[in-house]
Each structure stands twice: as structure tokens, then as C-alpha cells.
Image: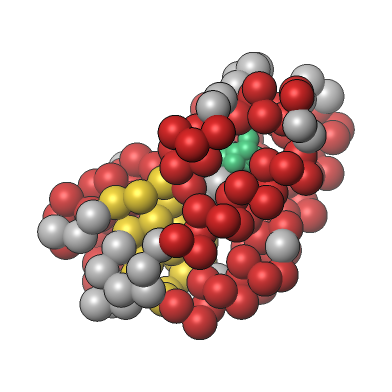
Length: 162
Ligand code: S3P
């Protein structure tokens, strides 16, 4: 099977669903954030010491390491900020967008200090959410609405579309 990429805003459930999907389909699961952290250290420290641009370079480097078949990949929320990443994922596999509402995201993330771009300003969070949402929808092969659904529901919905 082709590699499956999960995209979506921070807190949309990509890692939880990705792990579950990997177990149920018997495919290895990879998370680009975890790959960056194991090679370059904590994301918050990368943003603080080297800046977002460096993080984006590392993220792309990890994405490109992942084979084009038989993997489930949870990506960072900003993977769609670079056109080359979208083109790579489109050329290598199937992209599923987990679409959670702003209310759902805000209640899940609270004031998570480990997500530098979530910040502390509500208006800025909403602006980022709205801008990104258009990018996810445009990049994805399939968009899945996740509000009110369990990780198991979402996993089944993805499986049924493969
Ligand atoms: C980011 C999302 C994070 C992480 C980094 C930047 C973003 O991943 O890659 O903090 O730009 O939206 P999650 O979507 O897993 O939180």
C-alpha cells in the first residue's frame, strides 16, 4: 500500500489516529515531529535557539526520508507551509486531513507551552487556524471531520476510504 500522510492543525489527533491506524493496518507509524526531536532535540528549543526556518528545514528533511510505501505518517501542523512538502506527499502517497473545529482544538491544547506557534493570543490563534485550514483542504485527497468522533471512529473512516 502507498504511504498514508495525516495532516491537520496542532491538536487535531494526527499522532493518536496515526498510531492506531498503523496498528490496525500492520504498517509502521512515523511522526515527523518525533523524528526531528530525536535528531535535533526538543521543538520548543529549536524554535527558541534556531528559529522557525531551521525547524521547517529539519521537518522537510525528515519527511523526505520516509519511504513512499507501507508507512503511516503523522506530520507537524506546519508541513503545508512549504509547497515542496505538499508536492512530495502528493507524489508519494495519500493525504488525509483531520479537520477539527477551532473550539475543539482550543479546548484540547489549552495553553500548551510545547507548541511555540500556538502562542498565547486568541486572535492570532484563530488567524493561523483559518489560514492553515485552507492549505490543508487544498493539499488533501480526503478531509475528515473529526468533531464528536473517537480516534477509533476516525481510524475506521480512513480505512474505509483506502
Ligand atoms: C507546528 C505544529 C507542531 C510542530 C511545531 C510547529 C505548526 O506539530 O511541528 O510546533 O506549525 O503548526 P503538531 O501539529 O503535531 O502539534
